[in-house]
Length: 637
Image 1 (cartoon, helix red, strand yellow):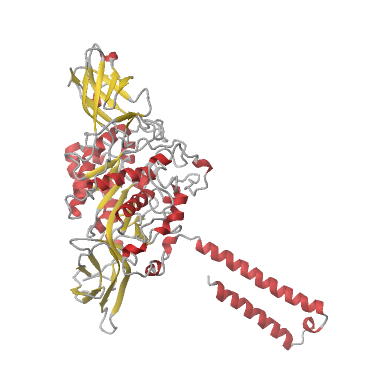
Image 2 (tube, one colour):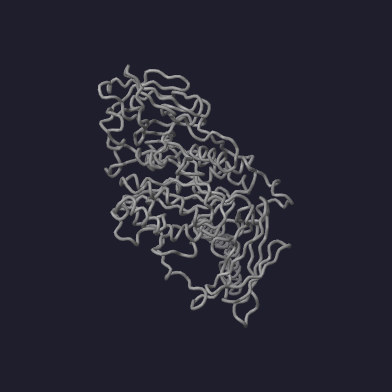
């Protein structure tokens, strides 16, 4: 509501009423001064009341979701008018520095003033629910429900695709980004990039035009102009994009732990206060939707935006914290794409070809997962990832698997590895960097009484090898998160509020694997495990000196038996193996309980929640990174 025009209307009504009374020689204006005073008081009271109503209405309008309007009216105006993007600042005014050492103990979130989602009686938690394939909050789409362009279509329009918007970031470097949109079939589209490049392309029979822009180094801002005709009787239509930057673009996907908003983070208030210090970080969010068949265009929840305390509030906290660190280190523009859906199992993010492949490998598990029919598979892939495959990306980060662990999905290993390869193939980058978070925590007594296979699925996420990258998961990096739990957190222990620390660990992996900046990014891992006749078992670690931070009685467990007599998942029972001694490279366990049979397997941190916050047993002495969980066979000496 326009406060100024409404105020003028009220004043006009007041002046009209006074004029009307004067014209009739109304006694209220001709008698004693008291009556005149009453008229003035009533008029002023009317104006004040009307003004208060307008103010309240304006506030209510302002509280509506910022996704329904442009976050920045003129994004270019938010940047200083300089000839070099470097002088626009690299976020030196950051309010909260990363690093797990800053957080000494869990925060009492029950006492903090945060806008956590609430669950109405009979309702569902928007981040996690028992049947994640129902997706009650998202759009149900299909190709038939989308606008029809091209030959035989019902829509004739000239525009950019939904993804492109003012203030966006395009991937820098070769081969240059694709730009596309819609127009009238066989019409010519003229695209002008800045002032030195002009292209002419033709709208194809599908009503789509496409051009590859020239490669650019990190920087900006740039402008893009396009012109074409729609109909013979109308003049050409002009469309444009402004405040466009070139930099590194990262896609952030997964389920609720990736969807987890900035305002819910432990340091969320500080992040929002300092957000406007980062005008070279831009972000957008795909609207949650599902489709039984592939779609050509995504729906947008939040257009490309510059960060501030309003626009950033509901964006992914992990995605933001990861991108902010990259920008602070690299001093280049960073673009973040959020595409996530709470409660989603992996098969909803996977191409149906991959699901069929894994069904043949793993048996019929993919179709006995609890989903009613095959059309439920790939529904998020079709609507939220596939329409983005023409983009150029620097890499992806991923946090998903809780829903698969909840039902002990046997097809998860095959589908996880195949999904990564499939996404790389669709994005035309066989070595596209892929970072992911190893699953964090969950109470041993699950909310729904389900059997949670979280320790198993953590191991499966590493291709049963414990560390990433490896011979199966190439050009990948992983953040261990099992020590970042808060069982008292309002949204449940499943959702770690410590996204800063998780982002720090992912960021270290990206620096080393993607940017070739030597950085330790995973904790100690056993090189050799040997058992001796005296009843002790020795674990020799690699990757630097180790530190015992917490001597947890159940940190190490052993399964007794002859070597190679069974597989680890069928071995049992498992017995606690107390720690006898430790050096900077070796742990000695008391495994005398297996003295008669011998030690067949040793496992570490094999619990849904293996330790308190930052208090697992083994860490790197120099890196403060936690050793990940493992289950490994033992060599007899």
